[in-house]
Length: 112
Image (tube, rainbow, N blue to C red; front, side, top):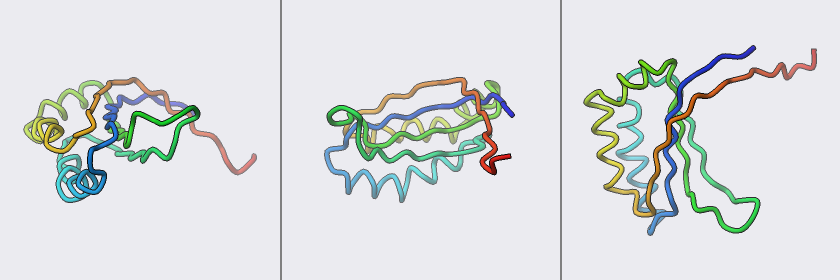
């Protein structure tokens, strides 16, 4: 079974202070993410390593929306704008925001 969704990928570079980054993320930014309308799923990818050398990323946040219209409405809302503005307050290692069309393919893990 396959379906398409629209994703926003927020790629956080390695912060100057991981402790300060984590504190702000947990106490402030996470709540701002949850306030953005139309987000169906938030996936936090804490980077554990890279295949070759060090990763330039500390955390990758995926925001999943059901459609492009929902993504646009969510990001252009007051909550979406507040979330975006907050990035500069704690992303001391830099941040990159990407937009992606994702195709989700469900795999039957029961073996049948």
